[in-house]
Length: 157
Image (cartoon, rainbow, N blue to C red):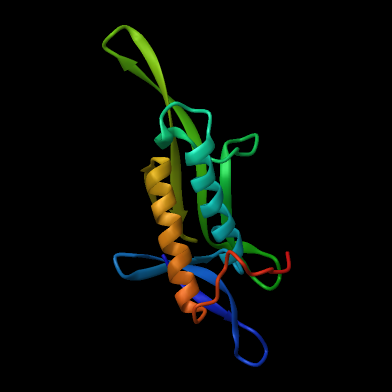
């Protein structure tokens, strides 16, 4: 996954889009102008890890939508048609049997990337791993934008 700068009409970078690749071959572009959103989500994951209600910090994530989805970034053409890729992250609660005779609930983020022809990848992440992934992606996006701080930027929605 590589952040690529979105340029304004005079060539100044102002936001990022993500290019998906697998084994060095590109297979999708998603999340047009998604940098600010990713920076906000990275802060939300860190905040949930510090102040969440689950006993284990690795199970703490921001409050998700009704279907457990943290985000879904898709490709959109100028005509509004989708189909050039998708990056999706949703939460699942997983019961694990503990030998002491009880169930323990864990939560994990399922990060899935799909290309337009069905090629995809999945990673199952703890909140610490998701936080590291998002922080690294935001840092890379900020470098791509010449050091612009995405967390402080006020991007139009």
